[in-house]
Amino acid sequence: MNKPAAPARIRPAPTQPPSLLALVGAAHQLEQRIESELHNVGLSMPKFGVLDALAAQGTPLALSELAARIRCVRSNVTQLVDRLEDDGLVRRTAAPGDRRSVLATMTATGRQRHAEGAAVVDRLQREFSNELGDSRDALAQVLAALG
Amino acid sequence: MNKPAAPARIRPAPTQPPSLLALVGAAHQLEQRIESELHNVGLSMPKFGVLDALAAQGTPLALSELAARIRCVRSNVTQLVDRLEDDGLVRRTAAPGDRRSVLATMTATGRQRHAEGAAVVDRLQREFSNELGDSRDALAQVLAALG
DNA sequence: GAAGATTGATGGCTCAATCTTA
DNA sequence: TAAGATTGAGCCATCAATCTTC
Figure (cartoon, rainbow over the protein chains, first blue to last red):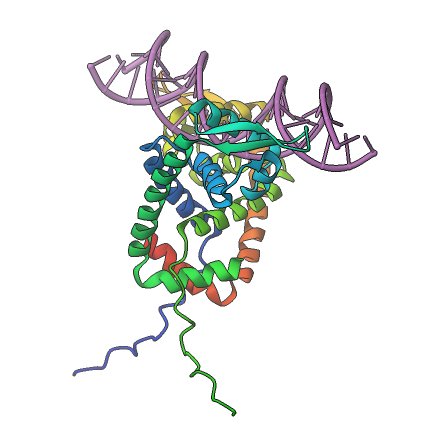
């Protein structure tokens, strides 16, 4: 009979709207992976975030400014820098001209550790792009829509 | 001179591969919003997650099974259920036949609270879909690629 | 010994209150 | 008063160690 198949759909079958919670869950999985890999070089995502902000700046940053860069409250930075000082990656230094302010200064060890963390993140970024494959443009579109 | 403009590109200019960290950051923002809205009905995302798992099951669940459902370690569930008991939303009950096991049972208040939380999440899901607009299919594609 | 749950220590985050300096 | 930083309390997550029960 050679009955023709149903006409091919150009668009895929109408999917139900993708779930907000599914997106959040998928992001959590990605985060877990980043955390896990960073752990191998002695960093966490928040710690790497601080080092990355300091590296981008190139000079010491006030804790207040650091909080703004990494989008969190000041008291969080206080504790984060406490732990980074314990790790020997950052030092608290005085701010010239304002005795209220405290600067976070990267140590030589901190710069080295940041480089290692950045290498890890770069590798994960490449792997991520590979997994995305042809969906890279789709992700760019989603990020633009949510921005 | 009226020099003609460069030919229009059908595809947008080749974007650099979308950033892994940008995706994680965007998901964080969405999470913040969900947390904030759930807070108005006295819930957090983890607490809602537990109630939702119990509501989906319809019957009490062993803490161990609960940990599997919400993808976290058992000790986390122990504390989460502690707080949910303090809130009066869940009760610990004995598991018939295995004295090692502890069941989480939703209270009437818990069922009511879950309904309120679910209404909040449903509303946010609709808002999210609206913000996505034409990018809904793109997100579905991304989630499929990452799954 | 292994499974289920808990406890204690630690990291990371928030908010409210506090202390010092401007 | 206001700004910068810290402290204290609480929530959420992990891991390692422990306790009870199988």
